[in-house]
Length: 317
Length: 289
Image (tube, rainbow over all chains, first blue to last red):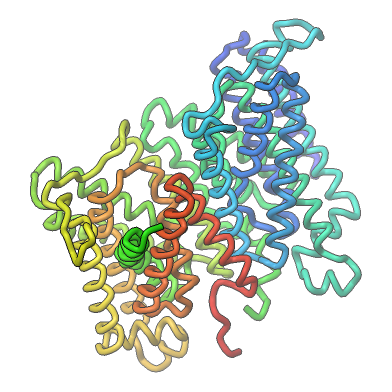
């Protein structure tokens, strides 16, 4: 990373750490930015999968599995921390299952399969009344407990949720940075560029792909679990919403697929622009930035989409 | 299960299937001419339905008169979508999915803002009466819609097979470059396909709103249906879309008869997932290289 970028990243990070005291622990702004941070986590975990050339249209499945898993565990008396971790495991398992089932699918077929997979889970949550509460969902999810350190102001309430979201984003960024520097990163890049040739060279694609699916699903589900413990309800249309499939794709695509910080930066920027500047004035069109961002990338800035699709550009298809 | 129940389910499935085919036609036409997959397809149908509902509340006209109005209202969008689709990069299928996934979010939110609150239905009395046919009681609206679907599929089949326009469209969808080299105006063929497909979607939306409640996010399921039928019908002839529609309609009603109405959406999602996994080779049948 060039020095300018490093300094800018450091400044943004510092600003995010100092935001709660600087904003006077303003509940609305803290809620807004922590949701933006969760979208950053989601976009980054989407990016881990995209780095292996797998374009997902169904990350709502993993967010929803994490959300429902965490909510149910919490409501059955588990501590929220254990419940969120359990939800994360459920999301990872759900991601590995679709990765395994769609092992031979690529490109558009894989995209549609993941879209259908998310719809499948939404339909199950919607109709399995005995467990999920059906369309009405589950209410009364306990709030996150206040940590004893450093002080209730900072480690409880909205500020506590905010710092957890920030920590979650930092952890997924650290994992992705680690992937980029390791053999796993090389294997995933090889699979993205030329899956068959990677196989011939001794990189058997499936286990690596499943690892990428699992990591991506795990962090998306953690974000889902944290989210339901913040809003304290869970409904099919809330956590299995198409938003959680579309927005990470838009954000990562706009920020630059395969870059470390692009997706998270785009997530924060687009989400805050939409909520702060458009929602109060033109609520009907507050999601315009996402549509515009996609159109710009799809038509004029192949940097995002281009790196992802390079493999196919000179292919025989 | 009595034979009458079974017969009733099959007839209802066939009627439903004709309607499914009509809903999928626009998606299938655009895919065969441009290779693009339009994930906003279902949202456009829902938009047509809302426009029909709005006009129906305002004018009180018979819903059938509103079909052409809603169809015409979507024509400007057709031009906008065509403009965007022309500029997509390779691989077209995936790029079109990415682009239309975002546009779908945009359309859904626009509709949510324009028509908030409870779900809407064009509850015209002209369409809700039941008709007795050979011992089976059927809903007049469903019969009418199935009849219209057959008429639309039939005229499209004739137009594609036996007119200059149809030849141009077929040639464009088989091989765009070769068709252009042979002097076929491929841009005109593409544009007319977009206009026709969007008009069909808008009109179908009004019919949909007479049978089902509209909700801004209801389009996703219709899009999935259209994708299932398009994959099942292969090369995208109007009559194979009809066949696929009827097959899906009958499979769905029979499954629901066995499982109860709760799991409808699950069945559609599983159909798509199963179809994709079964055809791991790709969405489009391979042409000779």
